[in-house]
Image 1 (cartoon, helix red, strand yellow):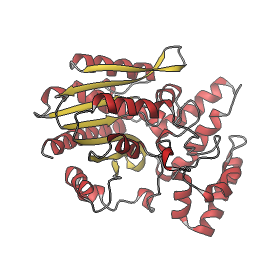
Image 2 (cartoon, rainbow, N blue to C red):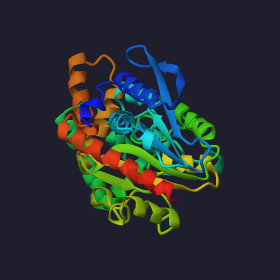
Image 3 (cartoon, helix red, strand yellow):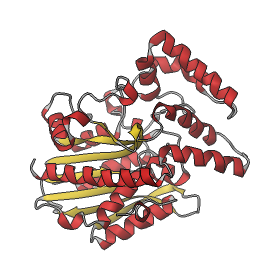
Image 4 (tube, helix red, strand yellow):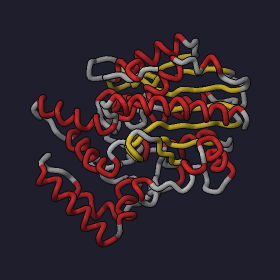
Amino acid sequence: MEYYDCFAASYANARAKFLKAATAAKGDVRSYIHPAKKAPDGGPLAIDVACFGDRKAPRQALFVSGTHGQEGFSGSAVQIGWLKQGGAERLPDGVGVVLVHGLNPYGFAHFTRTTENNVDLNRNFVDRDAGTTPDNSHYETLHDGLLIRDWTDAENARVNGVLEGFAKAHGQDTLFDTLARGQYRHQDGLMFGGKDREWSNRTLETIVQETLPAAERVAFIDWHTGIGEYGKPFFLCFNEADGPLFARACDWWGKENVDGVRPHGMARPNYTGLVFHGVQRFLGNRPMCGAVIEFGTRGVNMRRVLRLDQWLRRQHGLDPDTRATLQADMMDAFCPFDGQWRQDTLDTGLELTDQAIAGLATW
């Protein structure tokens, strides 16, 4: 399977490839069209869903791409590759698969991490019925200092100084937690989890209700990029540590890969509002085993690129060539143009998908 058969250069092309491959594989395909937003070319934005195998089987897999917009190109490629290599045709008996393509279609189409409301979708799935949104008091002390005024080396050096000062006072683990866990007050800030549920959040709940009503056990993958060694998979399993579902994820993908891994060599942040947690809630008491699977790119240097993404969102009237140049750098950080990275992550993604399905079949 060649990577260029599966990766795409735009959201529209990725969507077209997915729909073509899903239709060819005789999937039950349905599209959830965004009611308010369009792609840059004026075309529709949609979360596309394709179902395969036994829809009434108690064992179902749910594989998601595009939670973070720019990262959708990699997850999309794995989904398309799985279809093109006949994954749907060789499913074990008693197993169904649901592919959710482009969960954040606005970010996917507009080359940005966040939704149309500048919400980090992977921090938006907090249980709002449970009371107040999570607190991130440390972020409150950093927010103003993190806002880039102009995209210059001097401004980035200033922000790095702010981060270094915080790390000196509180430690690198606390800094990582503060920047990554999610915050719910500043819409112009990093990892903003939103003041309400996003359209993609509500739509995913509908998708779970419509495609997994018979599921008694669910395997889950949410594809991402950024954390980990360049071109290698990095697993973030949010099943209860030391519980049976966590142990099952270790059986599927290797205990050495899943248990005790430290992102960027630091303690794992106390992430809030993850898609993982949202799907667990949508399923009720039904068990779900799985992980967020990242493919490594620039490591901790992604902090700079996340700032660039937010800065570009605030720029109106920026010189088009300057925007395109900076956007290309940002996109290379989230989905490297390096053909070897794309081939390696596609091959590994297909292997990890098959491992999850094989594990699900014996669960």
